[in-house]
Amino acid sequence: MAMIQLFWAVILIGTTTSNAFKSPQPSSRSFALNLKPTFAPDFYDKYDHENDFRIPNRIGFTMDKWNGKEDPADVLDSIVEAGITFLSCSDDSDKDLLGSAISKQEYEVLVACSYNARFKFSGGEGSIVNAMEESLRKLTSISEAKLLQARASRFSLISLNSIADGLLECIDEGFCEHAGVIDMAPGKLRSMVRKMEQRDESLLSNQFEFNLVNRKNEKWIRKCKDLGVIPLIRNPLGKDLLASARWTSDDPLYQGKRSFSNKKLEKYEPLHSMQFGILEKVQKRVGVGADRGPDLKDYRARRYEGKKKKSGKVTPAQIAINYVIAKGGVPLVDIYDEETADELIGCVGWKLEKDEVDLLDQASELSKM
Image 1 (cartoon, helix red, strand yellow):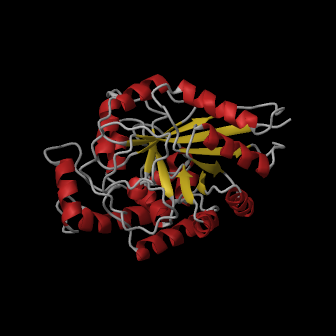
Image 2 (tube, rainbow, N blue to C red):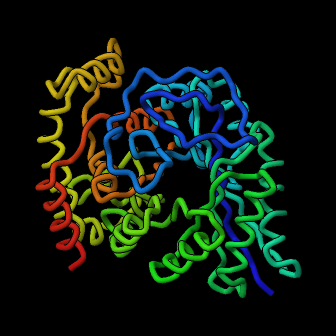
């Protein structure tokens, strides 16, 4: 008996290219929509990417926990327009809601779908194909996958060969063009890369957790980059958003809610204090109209023009998200409402300096003691 618990499919809607996204050559199975490029530049267009697959601005988001009052289509439009086009949704997502929002987009979008399932493996890799087909059927607005990522349970008896064969069969069947994995440790990852190469395919990505309060998988990022695999990072703000610094020892309530004990917040005081200290430095160089080049100045001025609520101020959560990017990962940020959507958008157009990353590393280590 074996189980597959999680499947991801990254879907490219349309084949229109722009400065913000340079896609690989489309296969004969791809389809086209007349989608417009975003006005926002890709600030990582000269980044040394792991492979030919491009995620604009090295950042993505999820709307799995969406509880906002706004029309999600409008929020999605705002995010995508800002140059953040990598959206992931899980089996828990409201697919009707997201499918409707995606269908209204006039910009090109990358959609990632997670699929949770458990199987009795009689057909081996055939079950991967069946699961992928079912996943695409549920999200009716999606026609074809760009990338499928699969994870076998640690209790699963399925072999790497079976996973590789299943991924390859999904490519051959036209369900996806490329393949990736989830939560695969460096040793197995190297073997998986080799097995895919033996099948004349490449492994594009590996998705796992990493953040300021849980840095144990940092070596996974380095190994991914060594192997030419994109590291997709879930929970970039940590468990219960601890790395967001929305709750601190000085202010243990956020929106009237207490999520952590005083003892725990005191333990992470060095990290949270460092985040606030660094954001003041960052704000001076990336604030609205800051002189950091014409692209950034124009983008932020247009983004926040005439908006009183959205001042464009840097937040400690944005420091944590950009920390993940600085470490080489592609964070997948949870969006709950318009406020968190705007906070995500504010991550675009600036980077942490090396000395700031080093200071955050040191503060994170102090908080573990």
